[in-house]
Image 1 (tube, rainbow over the protein chains, first blue to last red):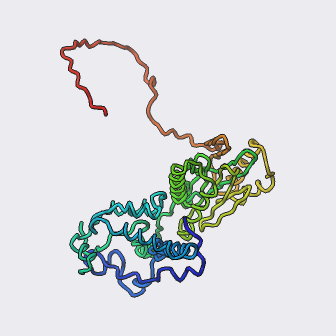
Image 2 (spheres, rainbow over the protein chains, first blue to last red; image 1 turned 30 degrees about the vertical axis):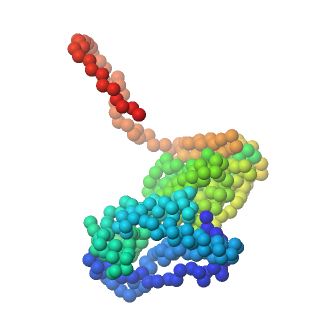
Image 3 (cartoon, rainbow over the protein chains, first blue to last red; image 1 turned 180 degrees about the vertical axis):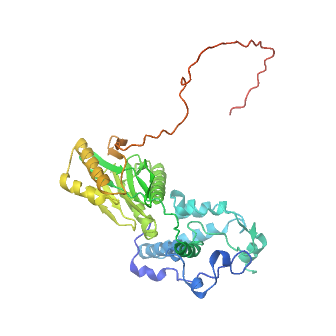
Length: 142
Length: 277
């Protein structure tokens, strides 16, 4: 359920970053799929909703925590964020699918269903990342 | 196929990878005098009326895709919960999926809490969902239901605007339907009178709008239950096409009949028990 954030909470929303290079399978510009590379393509989103959807969950969380801090004091969001962090740490290896059950229960996602559960389910993704690269990226060795 | 550049799992939800490609393709197709296929819109007349005992919702059954009638028996009144139904106008797939999601969310809620959901809860969920997608989901909905606080009728626009009103019409034929409703609506009407009023409103929408037509569906929601009358009234211009082309048994007359019994005797019988746990 969205809380109706006050305008003052806008300062806590996630800043806008660029879209990044449109890399394909071999690490270079995928001309067939995303057209010729240009600075405009990299900076501006191609769809009106792309930016807002990328950061939607983060923005919602920031707004909710900010409201909670104003209502109940600093301890409330601190305790919640500590629990989230603890639940997020125990997962499978990066290239395997984890259920995120504890995290979902804490956030209340187990009682609602939205487009994130239906579309583009990572458990049914047809591509797999290269396991060594993904583990190296996660451990910061890349 | 393992990709060497994927370092994080892809995010779930909407994927915008093909947007720029689609925009480029659209430009190429227009130049070549061909068009991309249009999504199926319901181009519709839907109406709702609050009466003394409950809520009456009505809808036509035509779905258009550009200038072609795509579906003559489209069901536009969607089930949300045992005490709530929702009529949808706009893009057909969007209204169907949105009402499906809403219905699932409310089912989870009612299983958790053991109560029938209230209409305001459904309206708030819809509003949040539609505003999040800034109107890209083309669904204009009329939500009607009966709960412990009374009979309610709400409209939700594609951008998330809501309005709570005693009578309502939406869709491309809404102006014609609203004319009838404005003329004859009275607060606290009887059920039969309300059904007739909604029928007349949808009928005038069908007559005056190209996007509405075929049959009229009516859904009556009261505290006792729901009566979904589909179709309430069929159009005179019905299709005479049969869907099944099998011959009835007895089409070919039987001239002679000869029965030869096949005599078998049981030689060996074994029983094997099946594990049904």
